[in-house]
Length: 345
Ligand SMILES: NC(=O)C1=CN([C@@H]2O[C@H](COP(=O)(O)OP(=O)(O)OC[C@H]3O[C@@H](n4cnc5c(N)ncnc54)[C@H](OP(=O)(O)O)[C@@H]3O)[C@@H](O)[C@H]2O)C=CC1
Ligand SMILES: N[C@@H](CC(=O)OP(=O)(O)O)C(=O)O
Image (cartoon, rainbow, N blue to C red; front, top):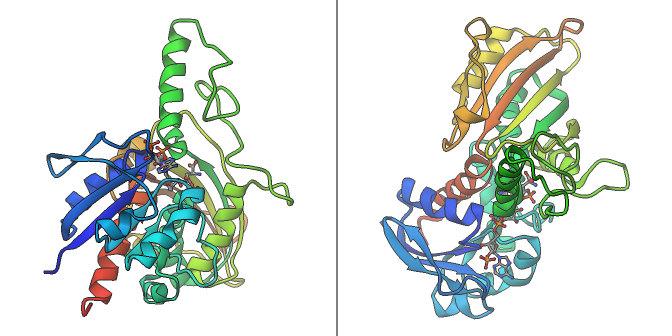
């Protein structure tokens, strides 16, 4: 099998470090790994396949100099906006974890289990976008249900882990946990979140939009429609919670008029979908929780119940490790599918 020179832009971050692990877990065909970050981290080491690899500085010429063929970007939208073109010009396909290209009509937005066929559009820009983490774990549950009955509307509330805000978010929660226990919580030491996150929940992720939803909430609306190729109505409320890792979502799905939800059919459709598992035994206290999904590549669904008032509505709860399923693993799965589809290159 052909092997590729693979770059990770943002290799020292939460997603970048996970990418190093996932690439190894999935036996990604790598000839040479090229970890890239800012000048701050150049010269430091990341671990890949039990070895330390030196981090290089991201520059306009680094892709050409290292003959990069596949470039995973996870260093923030502004870095992708500035540097993705250099990778593409050097002949690489870019798999971008940031939000920068997601809604560009020429750039495919892909969850491989849901819309793998869209990968074939990559040649237009040389870039394949990885969706928002909360969107990925939601559409993984929505796709089989849309195929089952046809979805009309989705109402979702998220419970998002602090690692969604990168390493700084995790450090902030851990520091505040320690400070809380030693009675010296310092309000001035906030970097990742606008309010204290320990012992609190914050009903705001990202900035306000003109319609009073936040940017994170509108990503869940627009990206879901683009991935499912359908104008499903989506209303999201995104909330930060003091959990280190794995996002949770409470989801209400309204199906087309005339649908009569059969919970056994819903459970069966979810169970049969790739990389989705059902944990749903309330009598025995079994349901999805962040501690179950962390460090896995599965989206867990449970608490499945039919609405008390309307025949065409179902409610459920899901969890997934958003650094893996919502970022690194989805990107690696895109890369593997891309290799499979372009195997003649
Ligand atoms: N965390 C998550 O759950 C998810 C994150 N994402 C997206 O992935 C991206 C990375 O997120 P995350 O890993 O959490 O963030 P982190 O803050 O943990 O890491 C950021 C990374 O970007 C690098 N970086 C920052 N500035 C520059 C620069 N000027 N030039 C080169 N590299 C730079 C950092 O390198 P250095 O060490 O040099 O500072 C570091 O490697 C973001 O766009 C985020 O939106 C997407 C889905 C989920
Ligand atoms: N905003 C998400 C993580 C993220 O980075 O999202 P995006 O890739 O859409 O910017 C969170 O905080 O949990």
